[in-house]
Image (cartoon, rainbow, N blue to C red; front, side):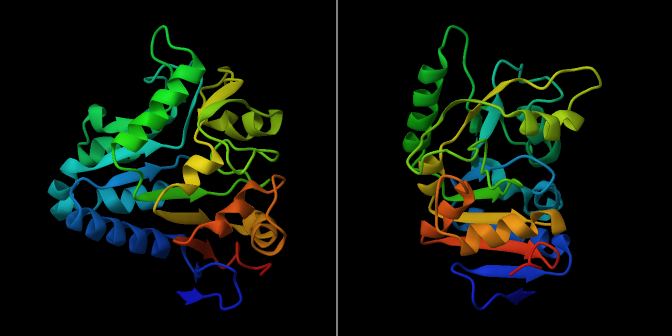
Length: 249
């Protein structure tokens, strides 16, 4: 592991993403051991899977996760929680079931029966506040610079809300759905302001296809056109890359 000396935020580069996943999992284990009611912000997608696998592999430490509480960045609107394409199903497979986390301690931005998206968003934000806030938020970066479902054009102070998914985002996520099942057209997402409220941010980006957007997020002026660029404002943020994703720095 090496650190990029000329980056505007702490940036660590590994040869193999598994190295980053192992380090982050060990850090999370230690943080939760120190603070049993730790609140973790979770991300979905292929990037964090290795970190979740490493966490699940800490079998001897599994008991310490009993008090862990999680908030997910986003969830498809109108999709049942047990649908194989839902982010809740993803998290259950990769983290919640292996760590035996109870559903009551794993929250998603979704509408309950009879609830409007605005009401659901307000309830989700309130739950975060009632939990004491998110202690550490895991994040990935989309190829166009989006974080969660905050696409280019999203405001710096945006909060949890219902957003319309772009055609490119739906196409990129289509492989996660059974053949012939359409990707929902909308999703509930934490806003950029909500994300920046977390006490720590750990941002992961791996692969050469992330190299250009990583460079832009770090080097170009912070703007709505590159939502990930707003992460530079956070006082406790780390960026973890592999050699390929760091190749344009």
